[in-house]
Structure formats: structure tokens, C-alpha cells
Image 1 (cartoon, protein in one colour):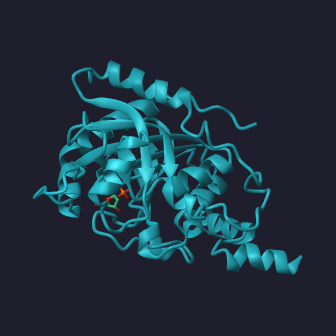
Image 2 (cartoon, protein in one colour):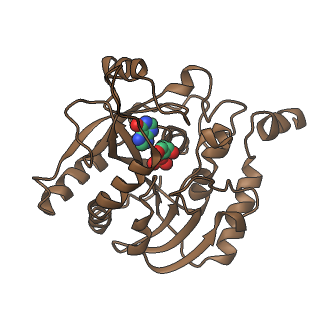
Length: 299
Ligand SMILES: O=P(O)(O)O[C@@H]1C[C@H](O)[C@@H](CO)O1
């Protein structure tokens, strides 16, 4: 039994249920808010935190064992409070696999959110447009994803399973629920965002940190990917595993390079600049979605 516990705990890079529970209990001892919605802010999208009221803030480094962000545009703060009349916890910045964290560690904040009482996860990211009809600044509601590192065995659920988090073989095909995607479309309409470019499409995670080659982009285009990035899949897989509803949204911060002799190159500064320009619209949409969102009671 001990060997199994050790494998679940250490060898697969994961955190045991007991350790995650202790982290959640320590947070609850310091924070009054009991969030039902968790929000992850992607690169340059942390300004959403400014709309949260009654805030209580903890730096990731204040939580022992919590992965700490190392990338510009990811402040590394948990912001608790009210948004759209709902108690929320917002991750002002995430961590990524390419920073050297295991897939399990990258998604640990989601398990802690679950233990804090979060039922709905809203995940945002900055992404490169693969779909040739997408323009810089467009938003995309995620309807499905490809976890490309998973093809090479990098799945956040790799290793011993603890049923207290979720089942050994979870279904992921409905992770981005139709209910929340429809809710986003209705909300966008009610905000008068008709002229505002919102798509629905497929996100693909590559491991990063190098941006894609031209041929990789052509391949992603051929297999039906609309945008590509370096995050989101670990968190969403773990959220679906532990029974959360997920809503995901990508901001197209750049168009990927599709011509071999192009002078253009992708760069993180452009990603942050576009984030800053369009984040207001994304913020408005998320806040309005929360205002009218029905929180289903847990089974
Ligand atoms: O955290 P996200 O997925 O929004 O960040 C994207 C992917 C890389 O971390 C970075 C590249 O500019 O932005």
C-alpha cells in the first residue's frame, strides 16, 4: 500500500490527495471567500483580476508546494473575491510544462480549487492563429482540444489514480460543456458583440517553449486545429477528471508563420501587447457570463 502511495506521490511527479487537501485547508484557514468558480488568466490576461471585488490575495510563493510562475505576463497571485455576483478564485497567471514543471504539477492548482469548492473552471489563454480566417485580436470559444504532449505520454493523469479525485479512465470528450459554450454565445450577443470576432474552434497544446516551425503549423492546419498554444490541456484534463464543468477561451495574439520564406517570427512581446489591447473585451464577456450563470448544485 505504501509503495502505491509513494508512486502516486513522488514517482509520477504528483501531489497526494492528503497533501493537496492540506494545502486547500491552509488556504481556507487564511481566506474567507469560498469560491465556486475558478478562473485561469493566460499570458497578458491578468487584468481580469481588476474586476474582482472584496479581494483577498495570496502570492503563489506563500503556498508551500504550489507551483510558482516564472514567465513575464503571469503575476503568480491567487485572487479571491466576487465577480459577476459569484465567489471566485482567479489565478493571475499560470505555470506551464515548458517551465520545467511536470504535467501533474502544472495542473495541481485545479485540484486545490476543487478541494476549495470550485465547480466551474474558466480557462483563458493567448494562442497563435492557425486557421487562416482568424485575425489577431479574435476570440475563440474552445470546443475541443488536442493535448499533443499526451501523444508522447505526457498526460497529467499519468501514474497511480486516486479515486477521490476522479476515475481511472475519465471521458474528456465533453470537457468544454455545450451549456457553457452556449451561455458564452448568448452573453456575447446580449453585450452587442455581434461585430466582434468570436469563433468556436479547436485548441492544440504543444509543449513549447519554442514557437512552431512552418511545417508544424501546416500539419496542425491539416488536422483541424484552429489555434495553438502551450498550456490549458493539463488544467482542463484534470478539471474534467474531478467533475468540473469547463469553459475555455483563446485570444488570438498572433498569426502563426505559414510561409517558409516569411520574414515574420512569433514573439512573446507581441503576445503580451495583443493581450493588453483585447483583454478588456474578454474581461467584459467573462464578467457578464458570471452574472447570469446558473451554478448547478453538486451531485
Ligand atoms: O499561458 P498562455 O497559454 O496564455 O501563454 C501563451 C503560451 C506561452 O506561455 C506564451 C507564448 O507567448 O503565451
